[in-house]
Structure formats: structure tokens, C-alpha cells
Length: 278
Image (cartoon, rainbow, N blue to C red; front, side):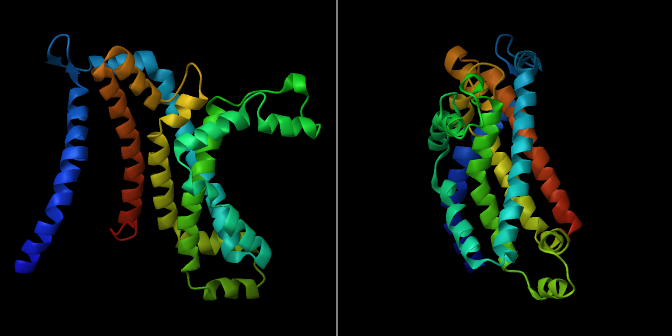
């Protein structure tokens, strides 16, 4: 009991800090999403207004984050698989050295980089023009939802690949060597032997990436000019321009529900594996 009391005493400052700075504001925000400040009643007026004004933005947010998460998953598995199964030491070392670079770049810096890279007169189009791939009159700007997807994937890919490659590196390689001995190719080994054994880590990486991209503000604000845009920009706009916390809380509730769907898939996977999600 003394050890338990000491452990609780040591945990208390962190628990109180999390409760005051994260849990309490979250509960207040979720509750006041249903508060109609003009009438002083509790109803769904904030949600009706949010869906009427920003229904397209909600759909775009869901589509962009799901697409970005899927691309992150596919590319992260490909990178981690080559790091695990690659037979060219120089190529593996080069890939291991390069793919981590975006991991240390903040979202705001990544957004600014992509503004100059994906613009109509940016580095990407200039490089394509110099190679003769794109005609200068037909160069297009990618500073829209496509630019957001590219930025999200570029930024989150190293994080997911690092987690997945670590899980693959800790596997017992006897099954891999046996499959190679039987003539299986690297792609078949990756999809049928390696990925099923690290699927829990893949789920964790994708869910964390999904939530991180869903909450990003600087990327859509700096890359998407006009409408439709992502929910984080709408929430900031309602608060800063109108002081409308009710609609902003309703949009936050929708974002929280999207995150809850991702968490539900993760918990369901953990229950299927014996109630021990990792």
C-alpha cells in the first residue's frame, strides 16, 4: 500500500496537469457544442449551422485525411519492406538516411516549403519545364487539396515508416529465410509473411498519422486559398472573425467523431487479437 500510495503521489502532478489542460477543455467544448447562446437552451442549432455552412469542408477533410493516411500506409510499408528485405546494402543505407529528413521539420515549415515547391512558378514546375515535360503555358498550381495531400504524406511518411520498419526489424527472420529458400519473391514475402505479423504496428502508425493530419492547421491555411478548405481553418475562422464558439465547438465535435472512428477500428483490432491493442 505504501508503494501504491507513493506511485499515485508521483503520478498526481501529471494527471492533474492533463486533466486541467486537456480533459477539462475537451469536455467543455463537447458540451457547449450543443449550447445555443442566443436562446440559452441546449439544441442542435450549432450543428445545423455547421453542416449548412461547412458541409463541403467536412467531406473534404474526411477525404483528404483518409487518402493521405492510405498513401502513408502504402509508402511506409514499401519503405520498411525494402529496408528489411532489400539486398543492396548501398541502396538500403541511402534510403535509411534520406527517408527520415521530413521527420524533424514542423508542419508550418513543411507548408511554407510546399508553397514554393508546388506553386505555378514553383520549383516543381520549373524542373518539369526544364526537362520539357510540361509546357510553360500549361503549368498548373497544386496549392489546393492536392498540395495538402502531398504535404501530409511527405511529412508523416517518415514517422510511419520508422515505426513499421522497427517492428519488421524485430521479427524472427527464420520464416523469411524459409520463404526465400522456397523461391518466394520479396513482394510476396512482404505481403503474405511480414505485413501480417506487424499489422498491429501498422494500425498504430496509421491512426496516429490520421489524428495528426486531422488536427493540422498551418498546412491547409497556407496551401488552400478559398473554399472548400479543412475543418481546422473553419474553426479558427469562426473564432477569430466572428467569435462564434458554438459553431466552432460543433466543428470540433465532428473532428473528434472522426478521430473516434479511427480509434474504434484500432480497439476492434486489439480485441480480435486478445484484448491487447499495442
